[in-house]
Image (cartoon, rainbow, N blue to C red):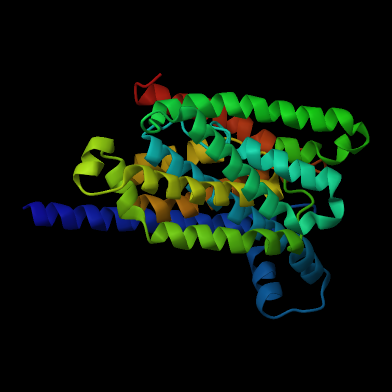
Amino acid sequence: MNVRNTEEKKINKGFILSVFIFISVLSFFISMSNGAVKLSFKEIADVLFTESSSVNYQIIWNVRLPRTITAALVGTCLALSGAILQGIMRNPLAGPNIIGVSSGAGLMTLIVIILFPNYYYLAPVGSFTGALLSTLFIYFLAWRDGAAPTKLILAGVAVSSLLSAGNNIIMTFYPDKVSGVIGFMVGGLSSVNWKHVYMIWPYALTGIVLLMLLPNKLNILMLGDESAVGLGLNVEKTRFIFIIISSLLAGAAVSVAGLLGFVGLIVPHMTRLFIGSDYRYLMPATIFTGSATVLLCDTLARVLFAPVEIPVGIIMSALGAPFFLFLLRRKGEY
C-alpha cells in the first residue's frame, strides 16, 4: 500500500511538473508575441525556423528573443536563489532581496555601471562578488557557535539596509548618471539585448547544474541541524556551499535586471504549495515557475500602458506583495 501511494505521489508530482513546463513554454511565446508590434505564434515560428530577411525577423531576433531569454533566465536564477535560502534557513520569508544578497549584488553592479561603464561585461563578476561578500558578512555577524537561520535573517535585514544606503550615496555623488540607473534600481528589462544574454547564461547554467546534483542535501537540511548532523551531514559546510550557489544565481540576475524584488520570495513559496517541499521535485519545478513568472510580468509591463513601458519590477511589487500576504493568511502564518 505504501509503495502504491509513493508511486501515485510520483505520478502526481510528474504531472504537476509537466504543467509547469507547459506554462513556461506558453509564457515564452506570449512574451515573444506581445509588444509594439503584435505577432502571432505562427509568425514567430516562421521567423525562428524559416524566414531570414523580413521585418518580423529583425523584431524577433534583435529585440524580442534576447529579452525573452534574459527574462526567463532572470526568473530562474532569482527563484532558485530564493528556494535555496528558504531551504537552508527553514523560513518561507527568506529571499535574496530580504537577507541582503541582492543588495550586495546591486551595489557592486551599480559601481561597475557608474564608475567603470567601459567594463560592463564584468557586471556579473562584480555582482556575484558583491552578493558573496555581503553573504559572508552576514554569516560573520550571525555566527556564534554556528549560524542559526533566525540570526542569519536578522543580520541580513540589517546588512540589506546598510547596502541600500551605499546605493543612495553613489547616486548622490553622481546625480548626472542617476537617470540611467533608475530602471536598474527598480528592476527592468527594457534595454536588454544579446550582450546581456551572454553575460548571464554561463552563471545561470553553472548554478542550475550544481543544484541538480545536490537536492538530497537540501532535503536533509530541512530536517533541522540536529537531525542533519545525526545523518552524517556537515551542516555548516553544506549550508555555506548553498549560500555560495545562491549568491551566484542572485548576482547573475541582478547584473542584468537590477533589483527585481519578490521573485525569490514568492515563486518558491507558491511552487511549494503545488508540488511539496521535496527538493528533488521543487528545484526543477522552480526553474519553470520562476521563468514563467518573470516572462508574464515583463509582458504585462510592456502592454499594460502601451505604448509607454513600465519597469517589470513595479509589476512584480504590485502583484507580489498582496499575493504573498494572501498566501500567508491562507496558511495561517500571518
